[in-house]
Image (cartoon, rainbow, N blue to C red):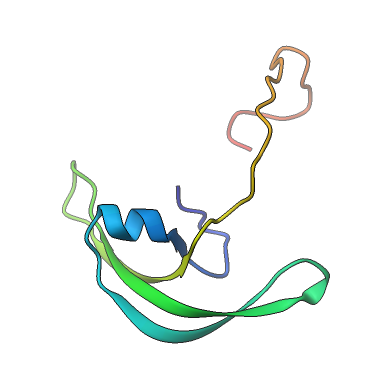
Length: 88
């Protein structure tokens, strides 16, 4: 998943291994909650190409063991949610 509003790009160590990507040393400061900053020491380059067009781009991603912690699965009744359109 890509978030065009993000300020940085991240990829998991597992995906780097699955795609046989080459990591390179980097010094990437990442600021999280409460303005806590951590330095990420590795990055990997990804080439992104859709299957149905000629568009492509390359991005460098910070390599992390995990991008999120365990997130509980919760079903949301979309019929109850109001004021939010599907494009939001």
